[in-house]
Image (cartoon, rainbow, N blue to C red; front, side, top):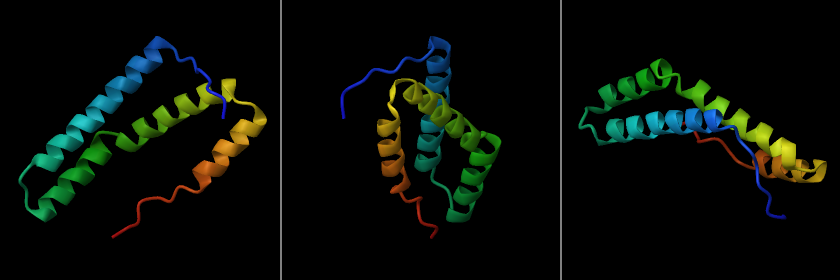
Length: 93
């Protein structure tokens, strides 16, 4: 694939960096906390829910996808979608 450059609005990038910083630092704190397993699970769930983590990640994905759509040809977009379809979600324990 040919190397391409995408363009993102500075405000969008600042929002993305802020959301990713919030998520990564919070996960780091949760991971390093010495908690009983049941409490760890409750805290993780509370963080995902109350921190609106899924929506934040979905928004980041959408912003990047839109930027890619602006520079990809239809064939490149199809190829990327094909690669993405091969990614399996994390298996439930």
